[in-house]
Image (cartoon, rainbow, N blue to C red):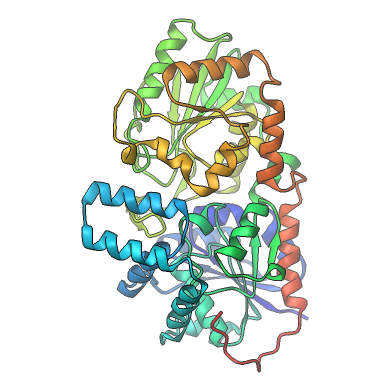
Length: 472
């Protein structure tokens, strides 16, 4: 029996994780109708061209980021009682000194420790009259809503409407930090898919899910590092990007100015030390700017450093990213070509250097080491403006504790760790294995299969459309 699945696609991250990882083909092979719900007209043609066919429909969602959603967003992230949220709130206070706002946010953070407060907020949010995307529900009569961002206005409003209509809901976060840094679960899905055991515990303690509602799947976007079959050989890859095949490649991820505006200091210093022959092997740096965020490294010319921005741009006009509260981000996505290119960058690099990034997990999935930058180039900044504070966030503490990705606090420490990995491929092997075991769940190339199986299992369960409206 053919059934209809709604899948909301918020941005390039959710496209990469869900549509490019192997999940979508498995759902289509099961014979069900897929309706992709897309945010923003600039994205519509891309998704129709790439995904629409006889089994897959692409529809544009109404604009979801209303004034009320902005209020709920700020109330929600302050109602996550974690150290990550404390750090973010305190950093904003140190920058802007808004005392009343800080006091109200601190009150919400204190109340969030109590499940009664979280249940109260969910109830208030649920009873708000809202038929978001109602015409889409009426037209397609979905049997299941799969919300793979979980904390976007689109996902929250779709989940709320689905629950009011008695439609089953399944959710997952677009990233492993969401439950501790971004998403108070205003609307609880019937089932939640998480990446690892840490996320499972967070879903239960912070999201108030029952243990049986939470399924660990691993990271579907990392299956490619195990399964392969999409990339280029080293010589072809190096030729394509203008790299020297005789030199070791160091991958340096640039997060954008919102996170650290001082990355160029580090790249310039690395270039000088390459000139000075400070490394045990000849090296070159491939520095990639996060496709979503502006960076002052764009267009720089630094010897031994190749700077580029990956991904595919969907619109020239920039937008506000409500998940980070950042204006001027790029509307980007990852096509199959972009996914294959990232796969090549990681697997052909000797080391991944990044600043509190998920790329540490990408590298681990590919069996590559990472080095974490914990200092601000040549600048002396306060703790609340320093990148060092980022490593205290809950999700990244789980990485730091393993010792598998050394955190460096100076140019000299960075040089030392690069040389250690270049000289000995087994350096920190046990710690890196701990990182892989603790964070990746299973490195078996079957995470996409587990996600698709969980989605299909929801469809197989009895759909009782007569149950009372649920607010949790």
